[in-house]
Image (cartoon, rainbow, N blue to C red; front, side, top):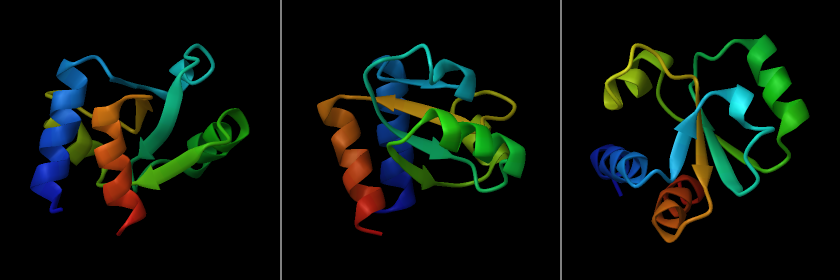
Amino acid sequence: MDERKIDSLLQLSYKARKLTFGYENIDRLKNIDFLIIASDLSENTKRHILKRFKGEIFVYKTKHSLGALFGKKEIGVIILLKDKLNLQIKDYFKNQ
């Protein structure tokens, strides 16, 4: 699966409200499947995420390019909830 397909699946998941943004939401949400973090995320933020979340974390694109994907300025952390659609995204990252 190529990046365009993953980008499309991420956008579809966003429209279906099966993902959200921001590491501050990690503690609030209960049904988190996995996280996608930007490659240029600060080390301090990465440490905070690792303390709060013990599941799978994948690195994908930069904050600016993730933000552009969703019409925002920058996105550092994408939280994907448990859903069949998000399983396809997860499989892509596992098979890379």
